[in-house]
Amino acid sequence: MANKTNEILLSCEIFSSLSNEEKDNIAEKVQKLIIKKGQEISLCESLGCIANGSARVLVKNAGGAVMKKLGSREVFGCAALFGGETVTEIKADSDATIVYLNASDMTDVFMQHPTVAVDYIKYLSSKIRYLNSRIGDFAPAPAETRVLGYLKKLSGKQNPLKMPMTRLASELGIGRTSLYRALDSLEQSGEISRSDNGITVY
Image (cartoon, rainbow, N blue to C red; front, side, top):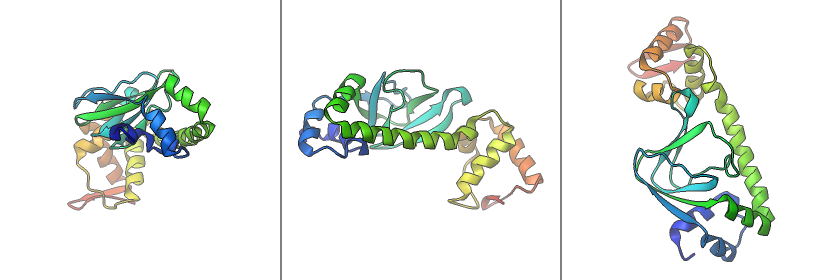
């Protein structure tokens, strides 16, 4: 491809059925945006991708809790590609380069290449499944329930868990005082234990 930055978006699985020549033609429509660290990444009705840098997807009505972290080559904007309000916002963790296709150009792609439309639906379905798995983390519930549910998910990868309390509070969208109270309660009930090695979930 003529533009290596544009190629990053088109390397996404949504476009995997296209030939290199077809990708070259679409690459001419890909746009680029430079974002500074801490800025919101606000693309109206567009399919975007992090070309370089990183960002966080934050839940607006959950105190800015982290829904997902985005790194290089990760795609976003699928749910709002054709309009509608979103319950999340995306902020850059570092200076970042974003590449994107707007809804009009994506519609042209779907019309010309129906296989891309099918792959888009498959991709969107996988994201819906992921969101469904995270809903419980941010739905109104006692802090103890939210904290324990989140720790159990993490413990599948590492147990005991070693994570700074500031980071854990941030990812759950609760204050540190509430977090410590919840951990105290969970420890008293025998759901977890704490030591120098971290938090053990039972």
